[in-house]
Length: 81
Ligand SMILES: [Zn+2]
Image (cartoon, rainbow, N blue to C red; front, top):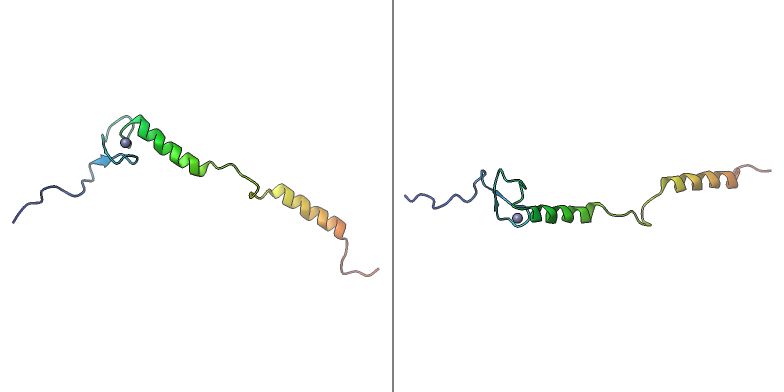
């Protein structure tokens, strides 16, 4: 019987999410190993989340205005006379 040489995963050990190097559990930048890695990760999600709404975005005020105007101009379409 041979004991395992090393545990594959130690839950008490943390690794930096950015560079995946061991980071101190009580470090000032945890869970990152350094300030640099912290900012790298921050910039990563800022890029994806803070998107500027473009022409594809629906403006509900415009939609309401359009519906209102259509109702006004359309009048009655089922009445005769
Ligand atoms: Zn790192």
